[in-house]
Image 1: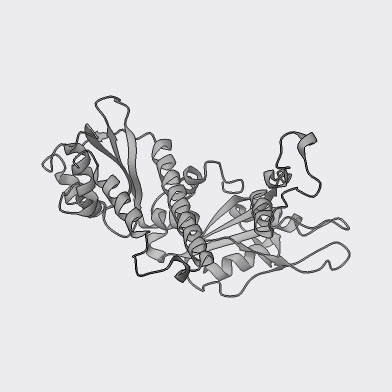
Image 2 (image 1 turned 120 degrees about the vertical axis):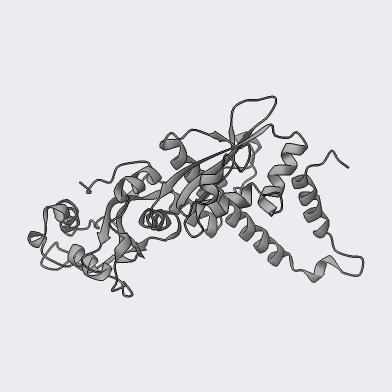
Length: 330
């Protein structure tokens, strides 16, 4: 019994719950519902994995050193810390000294000190997992690293990781070859952060679902090609396009609604130097050749209290998170 880790036992417990009792028939739960639930759970797991991978990339990009956790006496300054942070928990083993990530998180709502207490306290679920793995010699040492962030930087990372892009519609060409942007409703009349991006299209990848079942053409039976489902075709088309961030805006003096209106629906000559590049890009995108559509433009935004917007290095924060420079930010 002791050869199983806590995680293993958790997995076994979940497996056991998957079986129906003797009084129940499997047909009571429709197959479609079970399939949808599995797909939903796997999609959520994949999304969480992608977010954690992104956080780990941010931590690696700023080249932080791992700190060995020994006791709370060495940890006292963090124990009392009320700062927000991006943090990672790592471990190594007796067989491999390289430190690997166990977990990474943006502590944007709860202070860093409180979150780390939960990961290094054996009475908490997170800490119990770590303690068990050390006691069972699955792990040798436990490490941590963190990067302090401001509230505005935390909201900037939320903008990137949690807020969906909103497509900007455009009118039919007027005056020959000029289109106009049609901003959506519901843009807040409050301060905050906003991003502008455009769609970068690639050649659509060849779907493997359309390949014949047999590798040998001579073994093919007429009419036995696997035809991709509508869902598969949609997934292939979505994966063939990527939205590129090109500008991060800070609505501090003006509201989010005012800033976005001035980007998309006002004369480019009336702006400060900071907006020249992005507004020229958006203006030029409105001039299209006959039969050619303009680039697809997207926006996303998040409300932030005005007092917090001046703190932090927001453009650099977003650039680290996305992995490339913003084209129209100075």
